Image (cartoon, rainbow, N blue to C red):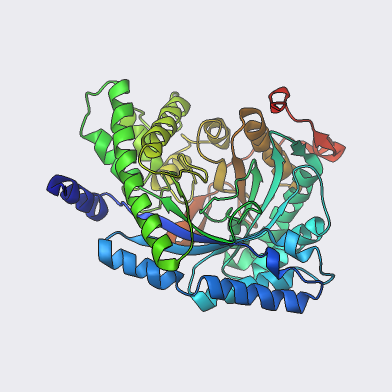
Length: 451
C-alpha cells in the first residue's frame, strides 16, 4: 500500500535537503578488447564502450523525470587499462584518449579505469601506464586514474608509494593552468574495490560481469536535518535516527539501480551507501558531526562522531538493499564539503586530524590541497601512512591530494561544480626521504593469514 506520508517525506528530502542519486555508473569489461596492435585495441575499446553505454544517459534522464529523483552524474568505469595495454608496445596514452572520446560520444561526465593494481609488485604494463598518467590526465577532460599500492593480504608496495609521490606532483605541474586539476582526478588506494561507482577511483574489476550498473547515493543534508529535529536525543537515539534515514536514502538508490538495470538490459550490481557531500549549503558531512554535538568538525570527539555515523549508515543501508557494496560509508573530501572547507580554513581541521578520521570513515584523505613546494617524498609518506591505516584495519583507504604548484598554505584552489574549492592545508615539512627510499614491500599484517 502506498503511504502518502512517505511520498511527501521523500519529496521534502529532494527539494529541501539535497537528496539525490550522486551517480549511476556502468562498469564495462574490456578484457575482450586486448590486442597486440594498439590501434586495433583502441578501436575495440571505443566500440565496446559506446555500444554498452549508448543509452546510459538517456535512461538516467528518463528515470529522473519519471520519479522526480535527481541523478547528478552518469558515469562509466572500465577494466584497469594496465591489463589491456600490457599486450601493446606503444604508449598507453592512446587508450586514455580513446576513453575520453568514447565518454564524450555517450555523454557521460567522467570515465574511470586508467588504472593499475600494483599492491604486490609491477607486472607487464603497470609501470609504463603509471608513468603515462600525468600526460594522460593533461590531454583528457573526462578520464580518471587510480593506482592500488597495498592491501591487507599483500602488504604495501613502498616502491609504488615512492613512484606515486613523483607522479602526483608531476600531474599537478602539468595541469597548473587549470589549478592543478589533473591531480584531482588521480587516486592512490589501499584495498581498492572492484565495484566502486564513485570517481575518481572507479574501475571495473576483473571478477565483475561483462557489463553492470552500480549506484552511488548521497544525502548528508537529509541525515543532518533528521538529527536536528531531535536536539535532546541521547546517543543511542541519534544512531537510530541515522539508521532510519540511511534506510530511506538507500531504498531510493535501490529503486534507481533496479530500474536502470531493467531498462538497459544489464545486471544490477550494488548500491554504494557512502554519504557523498557537495559544496552546496546543507549538504555536508562536517555539519552532520556538528549537529551530533561538536562545536566544529576537528574538535575532540570528531573521530568518535564519525565512527558512529559511518556504522549507523551501514546498518541502516544494508537492510534496505539486496546488494550493498562499493565503499559504503561517509566521505570526507575537503574541497567537496562546505563544512569541511570552513573548518579547514579556520584551523579547526588539520591533515593530522583528517588522517585519524580516515581510520573510521569510508575512504581516506580526499581532495586535499597542499602547498606547492611539497616534495615527492612527502607525498609518498602521506600515501604510505594512509595505506597503513587501510592495511591494518582491513578497510579501503585512499589519497587524493593536490599539490598547489606556486601557492602556499592559506591560499586556495577553485575548480567549481562538484569538485568545489580547496583551502591549501599546512603539511609537516620534516622529511621521510630515507624511509621512502628504502623501497621494497611492507609486509602484510598477521591477521591477513585467514585461510
